[in-house]
Length: 133
Image (cartoon, rainbow, N blue to C red; front, side, top):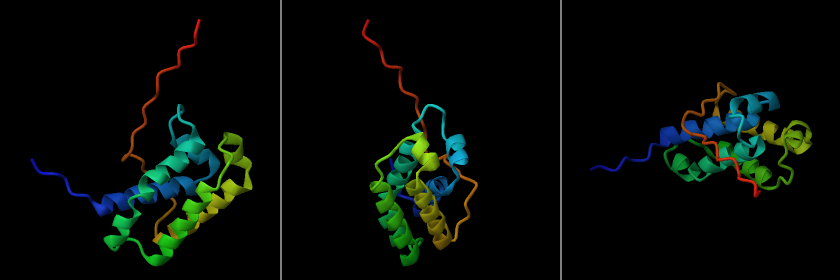
């Protein structure tokens, strides 16, 4: 049996789509993700899932220094957020800043804002919690 080799181009597509999702307007962010997820968390988790792949993407020559710096700034901003509600996602200026940073990162990556393709991931609804009787 052969072990599949990592595909930096697939990692790049995953990174682009996660940044596109962060760059999207509130309405598109909510509409893109399944109804059962906590949207602010998923935005950050999608990006965080691919953030760990950035060194491999850079090693493959797919990400230049300027774009990497934009992504680092975006990563730092997400890490500094404290309000993870839908109201904050819609109205908090820090989320607006994250959208602007994501748009700047896409420009530095020479990628469009959409369409957003999250087919590389999957979402599984959890079981409803049982309430003690």
